[in-house]
Length: 115
Length: 113
Image (tube, rainbow over all chains, first blue to last red; front, side, top):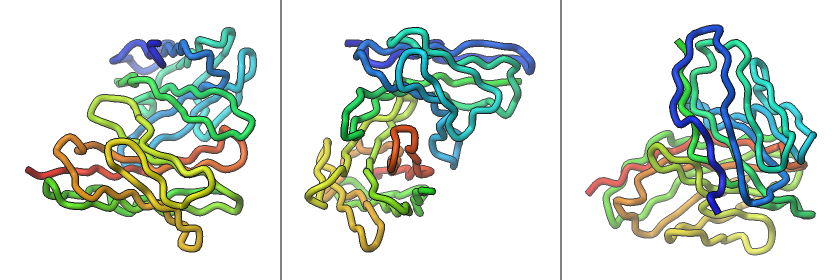
């Protein structure tokens, strides 16, 4: 298994440009989520999905859109990039257990710079 | 609401010395607690987790953590660190539904040869 994969690894955008960060998992996990990591702030949840066709907002959703058309893929879209979105983005997935105790598996991250 | 506090942003320690990374949490309901490690330019990897049962949890790479409900703490320990343990460590708490995962701000462990 490749686990959780993310592309690209690095990206530089100009203010106002749009782009999509890709995330895929091959573990048949139902839960997927996007976090951003900023210095001194830990990881903050942007959006998450509990299954294909179902998404919801996390702690910092503004400026980002998501969709979940398949179990495997969970892309994150920036419609109009802003310098405040400069960050490292992590995708994570986990299986669905009735006790809600499943482990999250993280991708390697995408380092985004918005000029 | 839940929160996680990692008081130490950086912890330098000599190789083969013991280390403790502190984590305190607050939550009004029962919690699940996690420690993750992040090596440079990599994603997060689960070290250990407390779900229920024994308050002493053993994880990978010789790390362990103790859940203390009265002090709302979940400190991470290792009796003898190695250079390869140099990384950033994150404490996380989950209560309620899946989406309610809160991470601490991280502690950078620097092992000095």
